[in-house]
Image 1 (cartoon, helix red, strand yellow):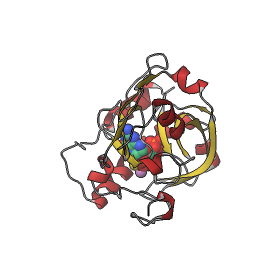
Image 2 (cartoon, protein in one colour; image 1 turned 60 degrees about the horizontal axis):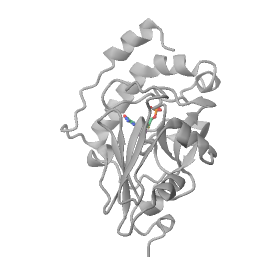
Image 3 (cartoon, rainbow, N blue to C red; image 1 turned 120 degrees about the vertical axis):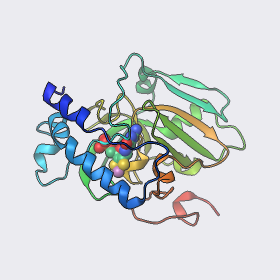
Image 4 (cartoon, helix red, strand yellow; image 1 turned 30 degrees about the vertical axis):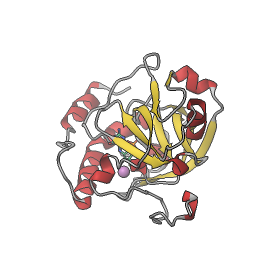
Length: 240
Ligand SMILES: Nc1nc2c(c(=O)[nH]1)N[C@H]1C(S)=C(S)[C@@H](COP(=O)(O)O)O[C@H]1N2
Ligand SMILES: [Mo]
């Protein structure tokens, strides 16, 4: 846990990025770097002798939060709402998620601003399994995600959402997802840049069109493929 000094730095790290503030891609990158730099020590504290210690030259997570703070949700109080174009709306507890078949991934995490962390371990439930449990109704095209921070939002097409390496993660870096990293539960979209991996996941809505999320409305590509490919011709979308 963070000591008092880290708490102090954390409240200093508030960055005035509101939903209504339009930022260019460059400005967003700057916000990310500033916030990242200010929270470096907090990240080191959280990671201890883990990733931060193994990669002293910067291959470590920058802790991001649009709001400048981290929502506190206990494991017991956590619920994941699944609604919209589904046959069986869900309110899943952490225990419900942990009882479903687990997917484990080890990947390099990459932020679009340039930093990355190799060999990150993740564990969670395939988003496709959650969608199957809820029963996607005809007419569904996309999935929208919201956060307990009431600020970040994300979206994926249904085809992207069903990829086997898109997970609702409850473990990261060999431990339960920490509060700073979006715990108890965050999204991890392995084939895309970090901004798609929404933290403090609160709700999944199955919808009839792609609703661009916070980062996309501020200039990031809706399809955040790590290899830079974009658009409806990408073969992995499975679209004609
Ligand atoms: N709720 C929320 N989720 C978020 C963000 C954020 O600011 N708020 N930042 C995104 C970005 S740009 C990145 S690179 C990753 C960073 O994950 P980390 O904070 O665990 O390092 O979280 C993503 N998910
Ligand atoms: Mo990012």
